[in-house]
Amino acid sequence: MKMRDKILATATSLFESRGIQASGVDTIIAESGIAKATLYRHFPSKNLLITAYLREKSDRFYAWLNLRLSSKKANSLEILIELCELVEQWIMTPEFHGLPFHIASIEFPDPAHPINQYSAVLAVELQGYLSKIAASAGAKDPEALGQQLTILFEGAALVERLSPGVGAAKRAKNAAVTLIRASV
Amino acid sequence: MKMRDKILATATSLFESRGIQASGVDTIIAESGIAKATLYRHFPSKNLLITAYLREKSDRFYAWLNLRLSSKKANSLEILIELCELVEQWIMTPEFHGLPFHIASIEFPDPAHPINQYSAVLAVELQGYLSKIAASAGAKDPEALGQQLTILFEGAALVERLSPGVGAAKRAKNAAVTLIRASV
DNA sequence: AATTAAGTGAACAGACCTGTCTTATTTTAT
DNA sequence: ATAAAATAAGACAGGTCTGTTCACTTAATT
Image 1: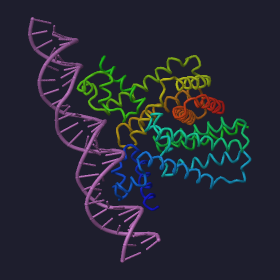
Image 2 (image 1 turned 90 degrees about the horizontal axis):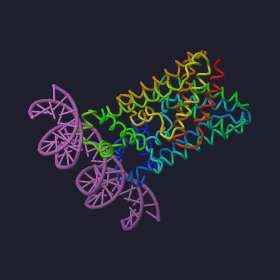
Image 3 (image 1 turned 180 degrees about the vertical axis):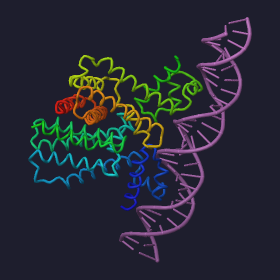
Image 4 (image 1 turned 30 degrees about the vertical axis):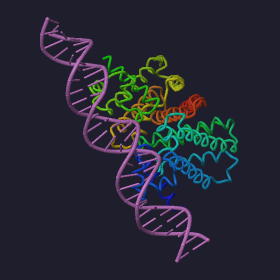
């Protein structure tokens, strides 16, 4: 499993710095120091490589969050506040380069394209994740709050990415807290 | 000025349906029924065509908004509420395909690329526009509110684009109204 | 020690990209 | 009416892209 990980790591780095479409297979194999046939053995097409990249990024995000969300506050609104602070931290991480499935959906705008469809699945996944927490925290309309938080986070990710250092993550967190307090 | 407009209209349509990078010059000239030399006379490079597209979309947006914002409410918070409703309408328009400068900045992620830089300028422009209205409406911290509204609108635009019909625009508007009411 | 699997490096196909240029025709302006 | 500018249609250059294939070498397992 060493090769697969090496390829995925290199692809991830290239996808996030140069963009997905702009990162050619030739560049990926040159950068990771492997042969082209090796890449195509592990990932039969570039689309499957992109899909694996998107899946892994989502998995890592949820794992990172779940590890830090204290289960003690699970049944109070406080867990939502905590969530907001964690997301702010996540966005401000130097390795953060925007929500991967968002970027992918823009690079592959055709709704019939597998990458676009998979991105939509991951977007629904994120909103479901947030809505579930909102529900367990006792929000009035968990789905509405979950979607509003999604919008805030995705918007903050975009703005922070396009104009680094303007503090979008912090302001989004403040807005989220306001919405949460108003949702009891 | 007929040719220029025809080219720009065709390019706009292609950029928004297939993406910018995915729309080749050959496709643009075939679709608009002109010769390649004609395109390159009006737009010496594809980058300049993209720039013109971005500029025009922003201009049209502000023109559309200014026409509808009733100046009577200029000095009360009500104008912000009105603004939110207009933006919701704008997002729900069938021709809406996301904020153009956002899409452009994702398709050209290199901060040194002219398209990325121009996108950043347009993003600052939007935030300045919203902050100015927030200021004239008497918000406590106009810049903070302006940025929060920017984040909400951009986030809603993305979510609505990726998952059409989930009502992101409406929920973003509700969130915005909550934030506005809390900002007095 | 022998067989199978995985990796290398390079060449290749077929398509697409931007931008230049040529030649001939049409439109516009004086 | 004549000169100047704009357009058409397309070939062309030089580059990039994904994916396939071939001949050969290394590593693992049994």
